[in-house]
Image (cartoon, rainbow, N blue to C red; front, top):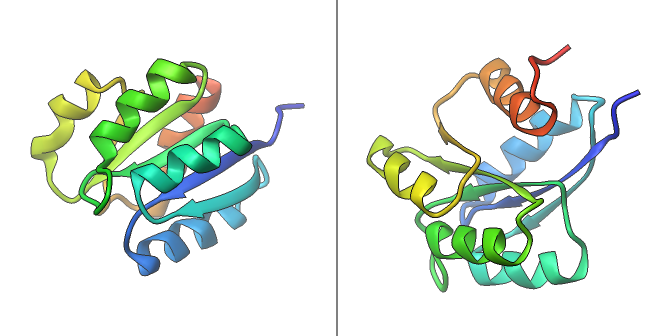
Length: 126
């Protein structure tokens, strides 16, 4: 059986965090889901409890998603990071920061779950 993944959702918008958390709650391959409102808060959380996956917004106050992705991948390279943005212009920067994947916030729920499965388990969602 595949291990249930723990996920950290990092976004300064409550509605986005709640929507992603509700979607992930429908999927049995996801264990605990935690939230952070900016990159600095995400790093503090990761220092305490290392999730398997971080869903990271790009534009946030205090520390943006690209800075925090670089920090996460430097200190915890085993943690997978999917960068989320409404703007596709950040794709190149996200991968340069070490992101494992980039995804538009406008993706369908099925595409979000498929991308997470590919990043976490290197396969399509069962």
